[in-house]
Amino acid sequence: MTDRPLDAAGLRRRTRRFLAEHPPGSTDRLDFLRARFDAGLAWVHYPEGLGGLGAPRSLQAVVDDELQAANAPDNDPRRIGIGLGMAAPTLLRYGTEEQKRRYLRPLWTGEEVWCQLFSEPGAGSDLAALGTRAVRDGDDWVVDGQKVWTSSAHLARWAILIARTDPDAPKHQGITYFICDMTDPGVEVRPLRQITGEAEFNEVFLTGVRIPDSRRLGEVGDGWRVAQTTLMNERVSIGGTALPREGGMIGKVAQTWRERPDLRTHDLHQRLLRLWVEAEVVRLTGERLRQQLAAGQPGPEGSAMKLAFARLNQEISGLEVELRGAEGLLYDDWTMRRPELVDFTGRDAGYRYLRAKGNSIEGGTSEILLNIVAERVLGLPPEPRTDKDVAWKDLAR
Image (tube, rainbow, N blue to C red; front, side):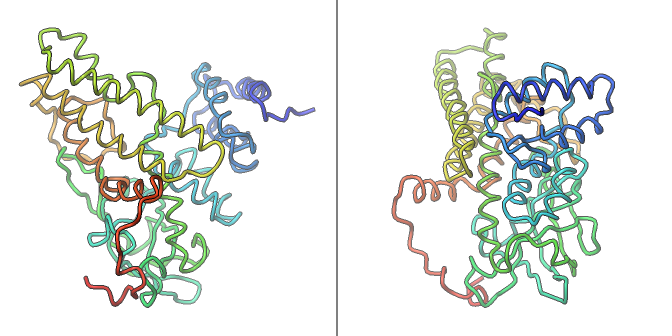
């Protein structure tokens, strides 16, 4: 009789049985990942047949611990974070059965990279003001417009895209959500060189791109509601990453402090202590948030976590540069590159300091997230908004 792995013991037995049938040391990496997905051990809280077992989300740690102990390969989650953290939960909630079965497996195994086509030059913080148009043409939609700050667009096969399908409706309405094939004619990706010298971001131009209606997520005109699922998961995936104590950037500063007593001052010591405590509070708060997620969908609390993540990264990286003194002003390489992932801890202090400046912009600007926390967490009255009921085409631009 097959175990129903709805408790930790049953799930541990199933994972060990899987490892015995697919020894990590002698199984091709991609074959191993595909088999893991098919066995329901990719994300155990997803439905059976879609990489999961319908088990509680909290039991994923049981699987991960067994696989880590066996030195099993992972799916390189940092490289495919947009797919895992944003596209997958949106597909799970709004996708058709056909869409889920087509996209989720290669998304999870990393065979197909995803990017996010949301922000525009004139619609970043005010995302609902977006102007990229999608016009119905038979069974297709023809899309024209420009997107910006698109991480991994140079690597991606697929994109989650929101476009305006009804300019006569108010800006939060008349938006529809699509899956865009980044290899289709009319999709042009251009690198955006950042302060770090690299171009992990891109701008994307869409000219007459045809998207079949079968690649629409949710109802026509309901894209803003679908996008909220993506955005809430995005903030959790950025700000709520599981870390050990002294994980992340605080660990790099603490390491320097211990190894270089010649750099210490009383003032820097006090600042390090304060930031160490704050980093630990944020880490534990993130753990509590992940436990809450096990019981349902992410809420606005993820915005608070992302806010804290951005502020701490910027303060910690600033402290590290000051602690290192003249050494902190050095920078390893200004070569123009298009990296596959962001590596905060694998680079030097100068890179961390420069790259952290983007943390308060990406995944929702800190100013917008403060509004979300104020209104949806604290229950404070919203600011007056005179444009919510005005047709998008009549808005001043």
